[in-house]
Each structure stands twice: as C-alpha cells, then as structure tokens.
Image (cartoon, rainbow, N blue to C red):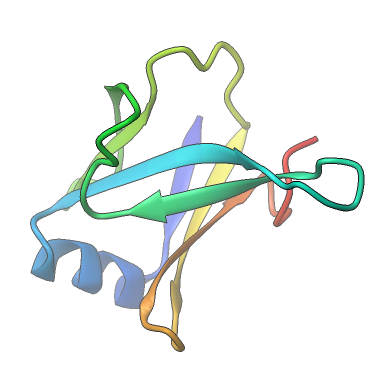
Length: 94
C-alpha cells in the first residue's frame, strides 16, 4: 500500500501526536455505502495494527482488515479541521 499524504495533513497529524488511525465506516442509508473515517486518537471500541505510514507519522488500520487499497490518500479537511482519507482516490470503499 502506497501512502500519499499532503504536507498540510502531515503537519496536523504531527501536531496531534504523530499517529493516524483509519477505519471503515458503513453508512445506514444509500445501500450501506462504506467510507473511511480517520482520527489522530484511536476510538475506544476498535483494535488497530501499525501498517507504516509516512516517514513523519505512524499509520494504523483495523486489525481485522484483510484487504488494503493500492493507494491511501491523506488530505487536510478545512472545516471542521481534520483529516480525510481516500481509498484508491475514492471517498468510498469498493
């Protein structure tokens, strides 16, 4: 898996501890579309494993995830300020 992160996103991740947690989130509408959620602190109800990341931060994915994207893109979200992750360039997981 190749991780492509914008400088702005990496700066925010570094400011908040240098770790990024990304997990799958299944929607309740629209046929249950699966998207990615991310945070710089691990949610209490999920287990993660370290999978690498950029040289400036650690990337964690769900321990139970069996398939990873070819490319995980990490971008800064301006409002509300945070991090967005994209699976092979898509906002949803296919």
